Image (cartoon, rainbow, N blue to C red; front, side, top):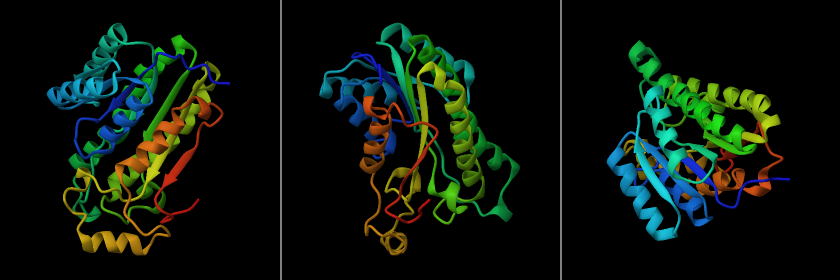
Length: 255
C-alpha cells in the first residue's frame, strides 16, 4: 500500500510555458493537493507560475530558475525547495527540447544538446530528487518519453530526440529496479503528437490531419491528456506500477 504523506511536494520541471505539458501537469497536481516546486530555465516565469498556482489552488508553491543540465544549479534549487516546502515525494520530468533537423544535416553540437537536455538533464534532476524520496521512504517519478522513441521518429522531432527519449525509457526501468526497495516507483509516458509550443508552430491543420489519419481516436492530443496520465502514475493508487511506459497517443502506436 502507498504511504504518500498527506502534505506532499512534487517537483515539476519545464512548467513555465503557458501552453506546455509541464504547466498543465502542475495545474493538475495542484488541483489534487500537491504542493509544487517548479524548476524552469526561465526563473521569473517559474516564480510567476508558482505564485499563480498557489493562489488558484491554495497550495504551497515556489519556483526556481535552473538549467536541468547544470547539476550545481539543480541541486541548489532542490536544496532550497526541501527547506521551504513539505516533503518532496514526487517528480515530474517535463523539461525537454525538440529537434526537427534531418539526420544527414545533424551536427555533433545538436546531437549533444538533445542528449544533454532530454536525457542527462533528467538524470541530474532525478538523482537529487530521489535522494529526498529515499529519506522519506516513498516516491513517485514520472518522466516524459515519446512515441518517437518507439517508432524511430516519424513525428516532428528526428534522430537525436528519438535516441534520447529511447534512452529515457531504459534509464527509468533501471532506476525503478534500483529504487523500488526504497518505496519509489518510476515510470515513463510516451505521448503522440501533442498540440503544444514545443512543436515550434509546425502543427498546422494539414499536419494534424496527417497524424489523426494514423490514429484510432480522431483528434490531436492535448496537454491535459498527458497531465491526467501523469497525475495517475503519481497517485496513491499507482504504488504497484513501476518500470512501465504508458502510451498516450490515441492508438497511433500500440505495444
